[in-house]
Image (cartoon, rainbow, N blue to C red):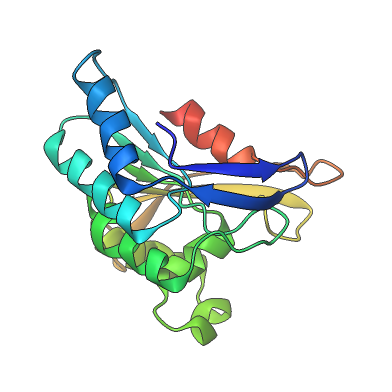
Length: 190
């Protein structure tokens, strides 16, 4: 289902138009009544109203696994979600998610209620806080870091801090920058 229409290229998102929540709801329900759905993959939602609609859809279909790629900003740094939308994701969607796939920037933003704290949070602190919101698993991707290697770390519940590393995959960073890798990863997981 379409939640927002974007103007984008291989570098980033230039602009977007959010679909009305009623349209999002109608699209989803029409499909869900027609065909079996094996998984939900959620990306850019664009509005608090769309978050609320999707949260209700997930509540109505609790047995379907949910992959949430919390698109908060474009790869080029353009904001795609304000703090109200980030808060709605924390309150309404993350508790229903099978696996949450934020990049490091999104993980810090979602784990914090204070924008000044974002830079100070370790990824382990983010994992503990985000898992405490109710998602089953958390895959923090390292594609937005300025490091020689990309490290994607999968966390689950447990451990002394409330989260434990299930696995960490690392590889040498490719030259150049790429837009859409998080969306592609979340789709592949779904």
